[in-house]
Length: 181
Image 1 (cartoon, rainbow, N blue to C red):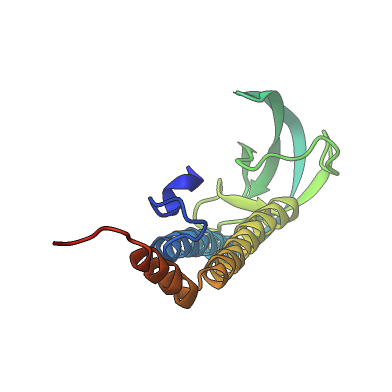
Image 2: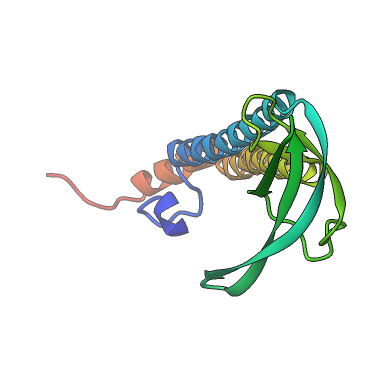
């Protein structure tokens, strides 16, 4: 795969055009990662503003879900909360999984931030922290990819010396021993 970035004449220097395209591709991927991270961060903040009603809920159960992938099976744990708003009782499973060693366990009292209009939409501190950490990881990965693309471009372009390449090509042209009649 990396060989496609080198010239056909097997010189060790990649063409500047291909390095530029590669750097732009990496930068684009980095920008996409940063965009996803910012989007998730803004969405979390908007959801937190929307879920403004603070209620105390009890975790009545934890639903265990097995997730299968090529790497094997892992389990995700989703708490089911019971809370009351305006005299109506709600039992809602969280859409955010918790870790196995979470402080949320059965019969735990948890503060939920509930949407005052749609009482089944809520957040809790652990979910907010998880979403913000996830968005921060996307932003950090995007920045790292962009930095790496700049480093690769600088290293590749630094090894490409157009003057030396010109001398090499001129020397090859001068050594041509064909005689013309």
